[in-house]
Length: 347
Image (cartoon, rainbow, N blue to C red; front, side, top):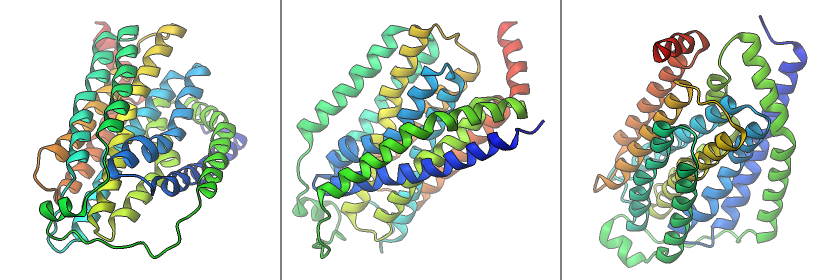
């Protein structure tokens, strides 16, 4: 059974508007973020602003009692950011450099260590189900990350970059610095659009999933990231394509910080709403989604802190990881497969 024409129209229209809104948020974040160090930009400013679209999706879905959409959206967004977007950053950035190598700043590598440790939050939720301990743990971990970034973030020094990367080139920006007001306007317009159109989009996806007899988690996993993460992917490509060390570090830090906010704060919100609203823990639906988030986030972190330098092959590995995650979601979180797994778990 196909969804009705009105549902399709609302879904397509709101989807397009949300893409525009996410672009506005990303553009505003990029303008405001040019004033800061790579770690601060990625971890605190741009990353948080780029997380706003899926955060609103997430909370709106939970408030409207659609936890399946919420977990699909946050897992899809998290995985797209730390595989597709980060993979594009490494693939394009490395191939744009003569040496074919990317060297991460120490502050960005430290972010990767924190991201690797942050998977403890979704893992505890996956094991314990909805509980206040995991919710508090996620919030405290994220607050700790913010405090650590503020204390450790220092302006980049060209001399240090040259010591670590012989190809580092210092270039002055010939373009006029875009005004802060313009960045704020972009953020406000994008935020208002997301607030207005997120709920109609969620309802149309849920209705479409019901008509097609598939899990809302599955549709949200593939559709929500396109609406919310397309600007972030384009931004990482734009920053990485020239091969400048500082730009690549900004892009990488942005993506790591955005992923970390999902593995900690958004997972904590999901857990809190589960307790507050009395949602039933749906295994294997939620378990699979949280497991995929944990695996992808840790893989991205390990690539950042586990190698002296990164190449385009690391980007290709992240692309392959996304394909595997998509196949797992398709085959295990479709309605038919999910019902069979639920019977196995119950038995």
